[in-house]
Length: 259
Image (cartoon, rainbow, N blue to C red):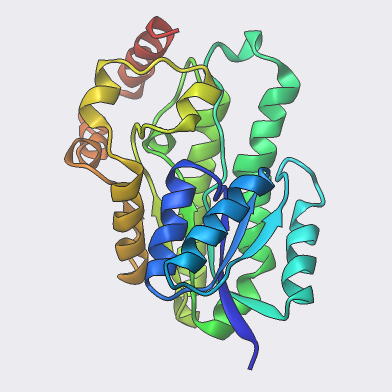
């Protein structure tokens, strides 16, 4: 019988690292994907030392168009089949879209949308065969327009819509599908984005370890969406109370003031 693994992208930091720890603690063998091989190796060693099965490490930059092929080849060479896909990798860029580097923003689309879609579809037959699951990491930003982070918010709107549709398509096959929509999480994401956390981040933030625990429980319970933290859970409700134009202006004022 082919050994089954949980594939986790963006596993070298933040929520991705914590998700790897949570899945490993529940007996999953992992395939860890990220750009930084040294961090993946350190995480794999930590998991093994804690009594988990040694993860397979796949250093890979998801910006590259052949990243999906490289991941699939590494898994096939190791004789592994995917049971769960956790599309955690992603990044944001803060500032006016017209003033940011265009190639950097297209790279964001490559990671946040292209790679996530590729891996979700590429391994869907294995998820069905193993009656596994798909966890896509979105954001509360997916519910909002985002002046000041226009491309990032748009990518997360895609993740939300795509994951909900995949949930409907894969449900008859017994595959769990969940979208994780956290708010501000203290991690390297903010520094890379060029974002300076404000009062809203202090009020709404949830620690990466807590986000990962809630995400795992939500996926195993086959929840449609996981929104860690009470403050985040009320955002979709509040959005129904105000016109879109008001939300657009409010988000723009908040984001651009923090630049």
